[in-house]
Image 1 (cartoon, chains in turn green, yellow):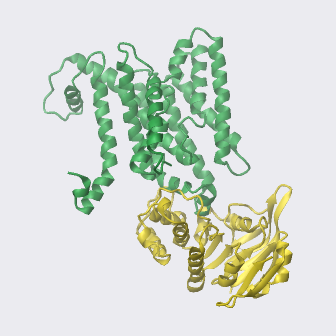
Image 2 (tube, chains in turn blue, purple; image 1 turned 90 degrees about the horizontal axis):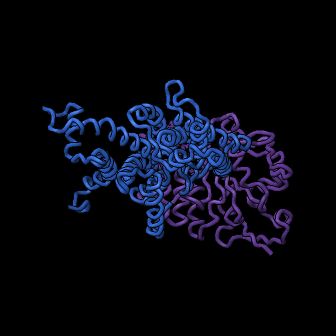
Image 3 (tube, rainbow over the protein chains, first blue to last red; image 1 turned 180 degrees about the vertical axis):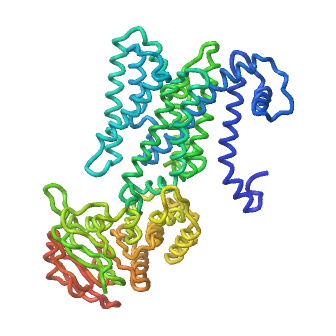
Length: 354
Length: 258
């Protein structure tokens, strides 16, 4: 039965709920498939059963080899959870940056998060710092500090008098990011031993394994993504431009700073734990916009859910395409993402794309 | 009657290029005042200063007795609303969404629009006769309809002072007429103080009860259309021979260049 054959109020409700059902449904499906696919295939039904069992939703334990439980709960699910969180972060921060800059080319790395994180991570790898600092893994910590440091520098440089115009911010992001990337390349050239590890980090898909990184990233993502989701209405107002938004009563400078802080926190957390994963934060908000409109109150949470599903699917491909070799997931998101993006652009040429 | 909006010796400019130098002027409830003058004389700058988008280097702008510089953006937007030119509206928002954005000064960042906000938006849409356009995306509306939506958004702010920057610049004759009639009625019937930057002196003569001619960073002449729109005054301001005759229907001054 099509939506149009329903009575008007019911059809309305279906239309409003459809995006949420689609995105959360595909996320659940992607999580189950992540648990199922790998060197040892666990039937999807068993994955669902084991999950229900773990949450005490079944009357009796299901019949499955103990190794399935170990593989699922100690290897695949923590990895899937981390990828889903990274995708969530990239989708939400990509949408937020596109809204902040009113520019469809903005992505989570626009203010130097990726190049700053890259520099931090490469330093940690090549300078032979201890592998943990204060109980935290050094590489994610260094990447996180590098990312936040770079964005802070960009924001400080971009300030013009009392205001921070978005064009200046964009240009400062490009300049500082390029500089950080150049230093990273230089360090990689000078140190031969760690090159392979560094390159694989920069290509994305780096993961420490286990539940620690998942638990460590959750607080940052909760705060950052939560803030972005909650700020959809004023982000809509900002679409009229800084001056008009100010005239409408929005404290534009303070608001932009809050968006930059929240989006950068979220993007930096994702990069710190999974490396640089391209295109998800650019494409997913576009896709959501084409499918379900430009209202940031819906766009940000939908892009977050969509980003999580997309990255999980990319991760499954990365683990299976050249099995038993794992590809960096960033290679998949770029190889699949770039042509898909071009197809989107051509398809949407005659519609209101932005 | 006390003034709703006062410019008090306002000076503002860019390095090496002063725009306003000691401009003073007051607006009262129910008055519709036009600011006219050649390009670059500071009409838009006046609107930017009054709306807090630009800080005066000297002097101050007072709204309802408050110094604009001391007001938070939200407080200021409850007293004063700006209608920009409808040139760059985001095309995907519906008319109703845009009008609801007029409630921004009454909502915290995390608030959702409540019943009182919806009521204010509905009333603003009824007054500007765009209720039937509520669900339509801005990109599908004509220039005149978009302009009415932006006027409705300003009305939803429930401000007593309304500033308009060339609202008719991209409109055809009928929509120019409609837009200005609407603004005129808001001043007359609802007691708003209206300041409107207009290039078209014939529209000024028909709709505005006061005209402020800007020149050299200040108000060169202020009065009703008969007093300001004279061949001598205009010829000097615009550097061009000007003829003024009577409008055949309205009897208001009719300005012809050359």
